[in-house]
Length: 322
Ligand SMILES: Nc1nc2c(c(=O)[nH]1)N[C@H]1C(S)=C(S)[C@@H](COP(=O)(O)O)O[C@H]1N2
Ligand SMILES: [Mo]
Image (cartoon, rainbow, N blue to C red; front, side):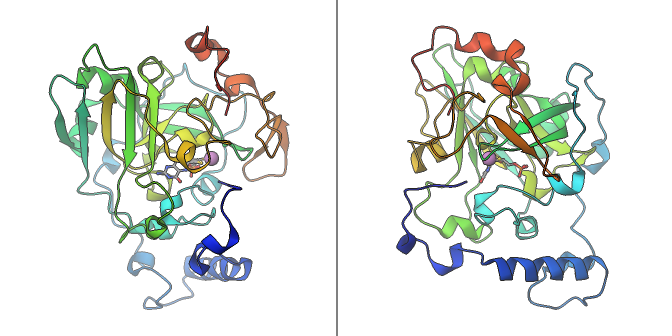
């Protein structure tokens, strides 16, 4: 994400990836893919020769498609979706996919706490046993004006909310990413409010569209896309879709979220897609489709107004669209 408030002197050398280094890395990756580089080069992780360790949830996929959620545009190429990412824990550029392979996705414990009848800790595989897995095709619109269309596997967030049995006083659901700067070097950048935190009002969280993705393209979620659990709210800008969640907390207070803390003048809590409300530094009228130079018009609520517009009735005075 782009932020204006950061001054040059606050950025340590390591935070910037000079183009040259990036291209070198691309060349290395290419060579590795062709099997031209022997294991042992310090720039490649140990698994590069053998491939990443097997994910124990692999046998669950593919899952049946829910035909209610299909698209009028072509799916993005899996390769683009899994190699062009935003995941600041692993770096503030799009080429983090290889660095993210360091994320250990097992064991993985999910806490459900706050205003619930009974707080709980669940192992990810136990949670997957209890949730109704299905596939949905969704659009994704990043606030930076690129977009993709992805076949996510996962379960409705409502299923998790129902299992959690929130108290009547709970109004919001906060979701948090892991915190471990040994794994995620981006978390050593102290000026960011780690762990990455996002939240939804409870009626948003229980809307049909709100989805917890556990996989994509009929496979378990790759680390770079937010394994093993990642929020998907397709009517909102992509920064709402917090990756690699370890904690769901029910609360009566609207949470301070990651980007709303870093750049409150540019990124807010509601973050609903709206082509007519520009970002302070760029237009939101069109979006670039991942893997091409083609730009297409952006739609109100990213094309999902029928599902969600009613959630915001009577809130016209609020900053709903950034
Ligand atoms: N923990 C965490 N979640 C995150 C981000 C991040 O930096 N850290 N980036 C967000 C942004 S801005 C976008 S657009 C999407 C990108 O998801 P993708 O890499 O699967 O396309 O993840 C979102 N979730
Ligand atoms: Mo984004």
